[in-house]
Image (cartoon, rainbow, N blue to C red):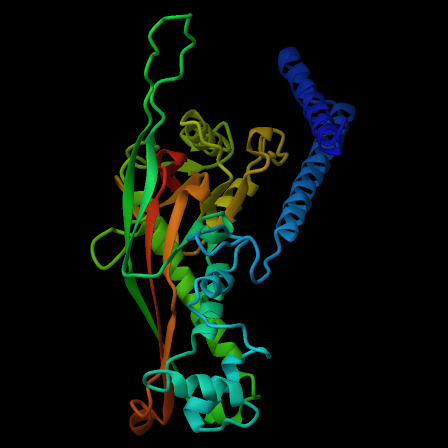
Length: 423
């Protein structure tokens, strides 16, 4: 028996022992004795300890798998592939496609490049200066640094951490084929009998690069008086902001140009409503409350469509409310084993002020097999120094960054969205 099986058995035994004590008390109509209460507390503690150990074990396994797929230039991202998993590097992919040129003989520095184009200080930045002088306007971020910023934006994205697939785009549009129907199940045949056809059907989705800009402004004094790592702060900060907006668009995007269409508004995604006015996450036996079961049902909906969900993305308050669930003896309720191995991720991009009926405080929860969500990314992220635009007014430097991206689903039925969750 594996360690994981042993932990699951320990958790199941502890839960059964705790349930047996409560059942015995309920059937007898007598309150729990001090001895039974202590035994119940021990059983709950054992179950919680085992559940924590399971979660830690699964996290270690995931980390090990990710480490095994460590990125390296010229690695498993082939020149003929435009599909990148979360473990793949956009920089490596762009280099294999010839978009970045040969790998430099020394690491490039965004900080040195920013200082060079901003104040003309190219000391120790010969490579960065050569790249700057080779660009059309002299102040567009060199392609190797742009690809690195795209990787930073991807790392800041929750949907990428959930397993979303990145599709590299070398043009303004890209058509990607997808399976739309498995057809009927294949049937056995007798000798000489006609074959029962069960054709699969395919169509395609078209990525159209949408533009997402971000302006960063900082004072001349801050730039000149800071430690020489200001560029290493600006770049990741801009990438993080772009990554957060990618999350919002991937989950909630309206689809009205120029905004991509997100999961919530894609046809074919399972929408799970919770009453005319939504449903409160709360402990039983309060009427109309929801515990862990709504997450279980969402997982069941995705599995019922023949997909295996790997993540659930929710607003920060949702797991906080779930963590407060208690049973009738005031003991915390652990998540059921049915949810084992499914990551619960949070994103501040998911609102908690959605109107559902008369409620104005509801939210969404996104459940799915997230490698079926595709984010198309153009090969270049542009970072441009705006020159003297802000110097005369506020004595500030400013930079414009923008990337071009789109969102599509490979299989909409791989996802379910809970609507109207309160708390």
